[in-house]
Amino acid sequence: MAIHPSRRIFHAWIAVCIFAPLVLATAIGCNSSVTSNSGTGGMSGDNAGGSNAGADGGIVIKEIVAGSSHTCALLSNGTVKCWGYNSNGQIGESSAIALWSPTPVLVQELSNVQEVAMGSWWACARGTDGTAKCWGQNIAGALGDGTTSDSWKPVVVQGVSTALQISSTCALLRDGTVTCWGPHVLQAGDGGTTASNSTQQVVEGLAGAVQIAGVGTDICGLFGNGTVKCYGYNMDGQLGDGTTTNSPAPVFVQGISDATELADECALSRNGTAKCWGLNTYGELGDGTANDSSTPVLVQGVSGAVKIDRGGGASCAILSDATVMCWGGNWSGQLGDGTKTNRSTPVVVQGLSGVTQISCGGEHTCARLADGTARCWGDNGYGQLGDGTRTSSSTPVAVTVLP
Image 1 (tube, rainbow, N blue to C red):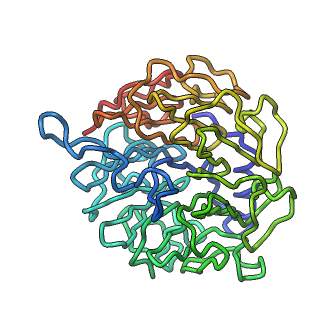
Image 2: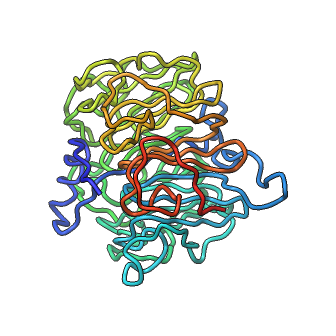
């Protein structure tokens, strides 16, 4: 598998690896299917997959999420299966048993799951009861169990019992507060000195958020009035406040006032357009340049968008006709246009329709379709595309290992 060259991920993990030098993560996955406690947010994670059963009444995929080099699927029966790279137990099986698996592994001790979120080499699940569990790599306390020990079995995230939405290391709670744990080198209220936090810390400046997104060292929150705040590292302008000054307290993203959904450093507007900010090495801002921007720029050629996601060096949007456009880094074919050419403006993902959910990983991308099936494309060095092979593909392939 090619090493992910994203400068943004390098900066984030340099900060973490000062305190954990033996671990290096290559990318952090995101997921466009999120829960909101307000009508201004995106499609509810509880209903993101649509119907819970196929035409024959069988189990279908409700949500699919792409990590750095592994993939997990939430099934309509409330269980989770994962496949791909397993260096730290992130697919739910001891890495001593299997370093990678192109076939799905049932994650033990998980039931009634409503949402799955990805870190780089770990994953988390939110249950119907508002609790959260995580498994895999536990760098800087990313699993939230009060330790820094990896675990291939899900461990309970301490202090989270009323979660409405989770990201890789944060939870949006029922009372509107946001609590975070793990590799948040800059945290609101700690003066910017904490490098590892295996227990929760409330982010005061994000109280009242209706959606959260982020990758650990910078976290953003969407509010009901359409504004966005972010905090954390800002060396590439990823806080969107017009500066490159780090901030341990949330600051407003400039020029965003009508956002309906948030995905890392991209926001979907009410009119179906999208804006992105921060690192732009591979064109992931979609503005036709490779220039970083500390304020949001308009993604060219995207209109009528209903969902958006960003992860690694790529960004994607689902359009109103249920097709997908992607832009940014494409060295492993993760844009799905049949090439490995980076794109600074959006291109159509080939042969893909009926899409209800999109997830950008480190070097691969996955989509959930309306019929409960899934497609993935990009790097497949560890079987993370789910087609039973280790052959990479620059166009979507059917996930045949599930359900």
